[in-house]
Image (tube, rainbow, N blue to C red; front, side, top):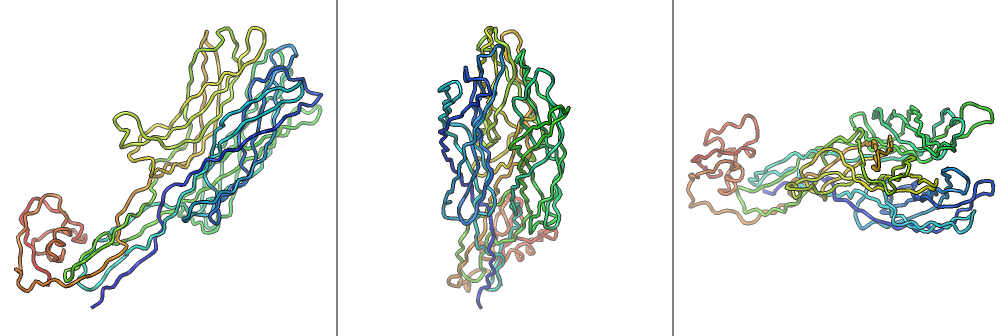
Length: 515
């Protein structure tokens, strides 16, 4: 008689591949003659705008530009802050290590490494710096696992593995337009930023419909007092992405990112046209279930098994909403006037917990910097940078190597003020996504039968003193007996479950030899 072996190839989570790429910046910015000349560089910010992001054929390709934004002050009276920017294009192609990866966009984030900015002349700014662009891709591991065994007196312990797999990931750059009020008399627009708040995401056959709100913040400055004012404008958006293979039983994670905003007006008009370029990212997650053989033995022959570990992702927490953050610090100049604040955020990453749970739990931690503009008694502007950390509430059992956070974050609101010599910044961070963690399952990937047992002189019945919690399957394997015979001989109630799943209390068991 020959052992019948049934196998299946199962895709599982194989870990996380990450890379860090340095993007050098070396450019000069020319200030047109019709704009005020540069007197002092107040602040320079470098932020990435990723337009193409794709994993395909074992390669990761990324294209976009670094937006180099310079805030400066002229010699004109008052504390007026002026802004200029330059786009510095980049293109990267990275060969991924040998392995299997799903096609689609990678997770991308980054942080500035350094930035040196100086005014070479009244109308020319020299900028040297570097930005660290990071990317993460989930590795897919395909394993040939045993799903069933038959004949040759084989006894098997099967297990059902349940988890989630990312079926489709897609990013799409979109535009939206609306009308917005122009700044008041004596005000000029300094900057326009925004965030995306998810409303709903409904998968259907071959597509995902997304509804949400673009929350745009228009920052303007009073040319007399220098005070910064932020006005909000909400724009409802609805998009349907065609995604072959998606079903209505899937779950969609959605997040958006505002890339650029343009405000244009006709002379004499009371309103301006606001054009928003934004990026929508949709991840479609699908429930998977596999039945595999976790352990096996033969009642007739000596058995050798080859065991492996299969990891599937599980959703640990939904992470959608707003996180309030408050910053307090001494002002570098106690007599200074706080004009306003910009905030830049880093990605939300998994980190080990603190204290007595450091070895067993993880947390999610993000970094950020508040850039506070301050005017001194002479009207000279400076920028004070206050670094901070932020995190969603919660600690989760596990380690960082099995965590896969899929979360987008943006600043939805920021306000700065002064109380005596103390600075206070209040902000809200909009997050959207989920935390996934890998769960390990033991499974067999191979089995071999050896020589037959010689039980001709052995007893027909054994007595075994079981300890509490011992598995019937393990006890039966020790005596190469059948688990169902052991359960029947001891009148063990299986409640309809396979006898292999039973555990025992402290008891004396009768072990019948396999027939």
